[in-house]
Image 1 (cartoon, helix red, strand yellow):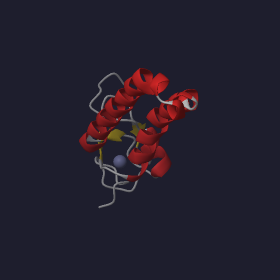
Image 2 (cartoon, rainbow, N blue to C red):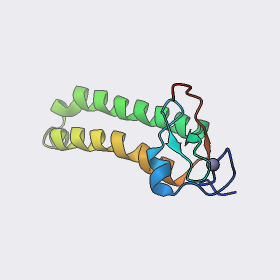
Image 3 (cartoon, rainbow, N blue to C red):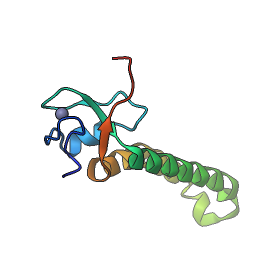
Image 4 (cartoon, rainbow, N blue to C red):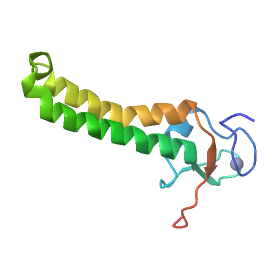
Length: 110
Ligand SMILES: [Zn+2]
């Protein structure tokens, strides 16, 4: 079974783009092409996203603390912050698009 198969109906209802955009377990999710059930990226993706956010957060703090002490960091401080923001936004989506299984959305407010 491919990671793009819908967990509800078992058909290949997603592609890398829709899967990447489906978000993690606390998101609203994306409807399956075939059955319309809302699906999100499962536990693996949610745990990865959480760990990744923590790492980015730690890098932010480290850079903030040490940037002024090292010239090679100080001259790149702003681009590095921007890069980290971009990574925080893009990497989880990319990883969700190509890894981890999907699961049905458990949010009930639909
Ligand atoms: Zn489906």
